[in-house]
Structures are given as C-alpha cells and as structure tokens.
Image (cartoon, rainbow, N blue to C red; front, side):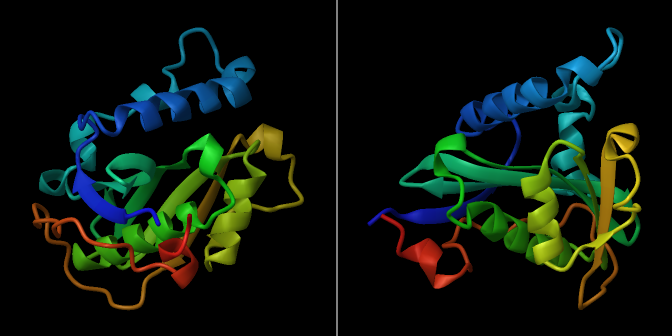
Length: 188
C-alpha cells in the first residue's frame, strides 16, 4: 500500500519539478494557440516568493512514497482572500481524488493562515477543473452561458467557515498524512 503525505515546501523543491514541468506542458497543449507572442506563459507569471508563508502564500505537495503525485499553491489576493494556483495531479494518476485532497488541504491551510475566502481561476479548456470546483462548493463568478473561449479565464470563489486575521509569515505545519477520504489512504 502506498504511503501518502502532504508536505509544505517551496516551488524550488526538486521533488516538485517534474510535476511543475508536466503542468506547464499541459497549459501549452491546451492554450498555446491563444497566447500572443509577447504574453508571459502561465507558469512564469508570478514570482516564486508569492507562494511562501512570508508573503501570505504557501505551496503543497502530495507525496506518494516520497514522489510528488499532486500539488497546489496559493498566494495572497487581498487581506481576506487567498488565490489558489497550480492545482495539479500527475497525468497518470488522475480520477483518484488526489486533486480534491489537495484542494481540501489547501483550504485548511488557507484558514490556518487566516484567510476567509478563496478566489481562483481556471481555463476555459479545463472542464475537469470546473467540475472539481463546483463539486467542492465553489461559486462561479462568470455566466456559464457566456462564450467561455472569449472569457478565457473562469473565476470562482468560496467563503471559508472560520475567518481569522491573516498571519503573513505563519509557519506551515510539518508533513503529515492527508486528511482526505478513506479511498486516498487505501490506494494501491
């Protein structure tokens, strides 16, 4: 039986690199034709420091037997709001609830860091992400009957249960087992 653990780390962590590279390739395969020549690719738009506790953010890996199989991050959007970015599961391990487990853990960490609201966007060519967010109680901030290609980015929000003042620089917890559905713990 595999051993799954959450680890709070940085985008510079070597364990994250294969996952981040695969995510960049996925963005390119879905959206390259919509990006202008002078537009910065998605994976290069934000300083890495934005995803550190010192800046009000965080970066999470879900490790299976020490290998990153899923991950996600958030940055400070405003004093009450964390903006989730780069929620991703390795292509070969999808449909196992890993992205949902990462999303739930990121929400819990955002609350521990004092955020009361989550804001995120996904691309119009990512219906699986739209389904995940709606299934986890996120509210669309766009008209679903609109031309989604014209919108390009689809924004969502979710209000968290326990608002607290934001603690910029809060120390993340040490690695621990995912607090996810039992199926996550029994995967082979």
